[in-house]
Image 1: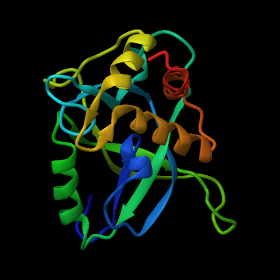
Image 2: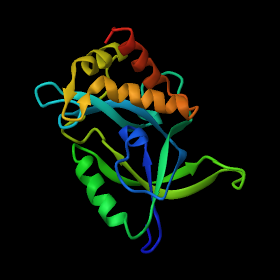
Image 3: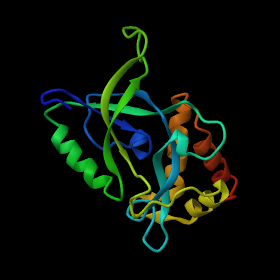
Image 4: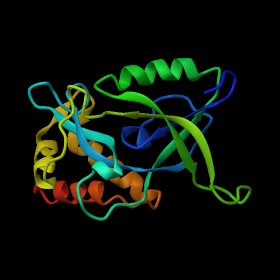
Length: 192
């Protein structure tokens, strides 16, 4: 981010429905080359140290489990004015402290009005929890992930609520995410 320019932040997990920071604009957005997976442990928001929850992180497409994947990972991009950016980043660094690192990424913005034609890309930031952090849980069968999520609860609430909110938000924006929707279905069927 250049000094004096707005900051773009890409949200793909709880930031999709609960950014909790002041922004100038929010729009449907996507990134390429990554898929969303519930491979990150949460011991401070959606779980506890003795019973960690699972929350979303991004995984390079080449590192994800086999199967059909969407070539775009959909989420929400937020534009933050340059004057607010330092405070927003401090708050996000604290919120995402459980193993997430801030990365620069190219964000695709979906057109959201007649005045915008075509797609626009902007440079921005995203928080990603990789396998080198102590809370990373990694891949597991969907049924095992759902079972862990079903019983986890932390200071931010039930872990299942995180999945339900994310799935509902993605559906509202017309985005497809087989991993999230499969977990949502398993949890709603009580198979988690």
